[in-house]
Length: 171
Image (cartoon, rainbow, N blue to C red; front, side):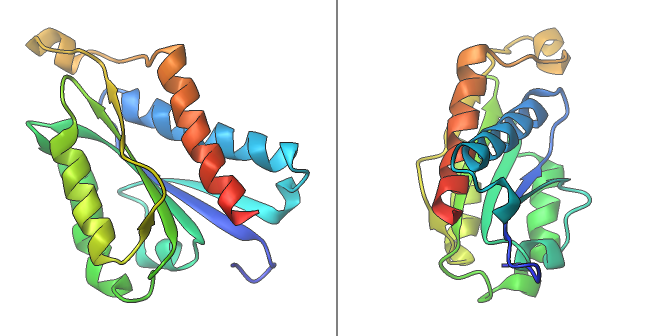
């Protein structure tokens, strides 16, 4: 809980082609919608940070965490991995029990990146509140992989639900 008494949901994301960024934005919208629905919007701060900009103090100041990144070559994207590497030991044993969730954008599978983030969350002793949400963009050719992405309305709704669920746990 921050100094104002509000709870904080931190969403950390990395995206190259836009899918993961859209997922993070949808999760933030879902969290805001639930806070408004519960008439608790003044009790929840939603911080959305690019992985390159997120630091240990952001993690320590959060009451719940959502991590969103693409899978690249069956692994977590390098920029998101660098975020975890840079902050891992600075917050170790200080996030225990906080609720968290994971979202992955993938061209086909996504399970490799999800497993990596799940292991990191386990190491931080976070409490995963749901299975990893994997949005499959079906990008298989070099052109499709590198192209800008737009997630479907159904995938956006799933992301909103996950963000809303984290918000509801805090309020």
